[in-house]
Amino acid sequence: MGAFAHMAAMPDLLSVIPVPKREDARYCQARLRLLIETLPVTIWFNPVGVAIACAALWFGRSDFGDLPAWRMALAVGCQCVASASAAVAFRLYPTVSCESVSRVRRALVALQVMIGLAWGGVVWAVWIEGNAANNCFAVIIAVMALWAMALTRCAVRSVFFAGLASLAVPLCARFMTSSGVTAYVFLALLPIWMCYMLFSGLSARKRVDDMLAARFANEDLSRELAAAHDEAVQKREEAELANKSKTAFLANMSHELRTPLNAIIGFSEIIMSQALGVNNPRYPEYAGDIHTSGTHLLTLINEILDVAKIEAGRMEIAPRPLHVQSALESVERIIAIRASEKALTISYSVSPALDEIMADERAFRQIMLNLLSNAVKFTPQGGHIAVDCRVADDGGTLVSVTDDGPGIPADKIEQLFKPFTQVDNRFDHAQGGTGLGLALVHGLARLHGGRAWIESSEGHGTSAFVYFPLATVKRDLKRAM
Ligand code: ADP
Image (cartoon, rainbow, N blue to C red):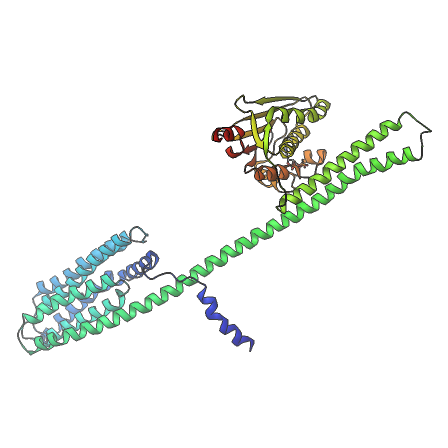
């Protein structure tokens, strides 16, 4: 039952595999290739076969009739010329490209006319007026040639027809210009032979096409299977990477959450139990530490929620005219404290042409804070960071943060915009972090219709860019109003 059900499903399965049309260049190429592959038979067999036939006529001249040597040489010569031409074509067209299909087809038609005429020439050369035995022998050779032609040239219709016609015409001329019953019988039989060859050739061509259709369907299926396999492997690698990133994230997060939580619990316990005595002057300091740790925790949790929201497509932004200089100053105040701890200098440059941009204020500050936090985190003591905001070539806004830190290996850059991803080097282990910052920057930039990217190489610092497209720049709105 199961087996029958499977068989019933087969036609459906086959119907989804697109079968190429028979006029496709791919079919034409394959048919021409099949024909070219038969040329070695023509190259070797035709002159050798005719030479053997002439030898038979020579040694059997008592029965076949006396044929002058020059006529035999002419018959073999005709075949040698055709065979040499076939050899040239075989060498010239080892492959058939899409563009060369028509050219190769024309060349093969010309070659086939030459081969047909060469066979006609053989019959004319060995024909002895009134000698039925000799002439029957010649015609048998010609009919064998016709038969071979129907089988080997049927794949390409124009070549096949050219072959039949170029042999039929000299044969017909030969029979019509001869006297005697044999010639008339051959003349009567010629149309029947031609019809028979035509029918055989065309039905052989159909079988060739069916074979090609099966071959192409097979090739297409294998290609699709290979592509599906590659995609599956890529998806598996991505899933493994995501899994690894999440495991790394959990390890990082437990560290990131535990450190402030331990501080909060530890300091609050000291204050609660008045462990250092009543109204110890250090209690307000501890309360400050609890506040800092709590704020840090809140930032962390907010980042996680923001990334989750962006990933779920539920984050909304409210772009408003934003004064770039003032937005940068508010970020500068926060970051200056951390920068001064490492004696870093930060230079800010805002192009005079850039006044207000259309952006969500919180998102813009978050983007700048994340990029600057990374720059501060990874720039060594006493280093320099440059913030640059300018009008991009196409009129949008380009913001960049450049540091002279350790840089990022080129092959790692792309993946850093995925959540929970870190370079995983000694700097990361030293600096901590969750791998969420750049994912947020990327997500927020895209919400503005822009994009974020990094240019960096190991040991040569890092430049992080965010591009806001023209539509978000306010001066453009002014122009439109
Ligand atoms: P986090 O810094 O919290 O780990 P991010 O998404 O902001 O998360 O950064 C991901 C990783 O990208 C960092 O862990 C670090 O490996 C690398 N990175 C980001 N910015 C820089 C930079 N300016 N210099 C060197 N590495 C950086």
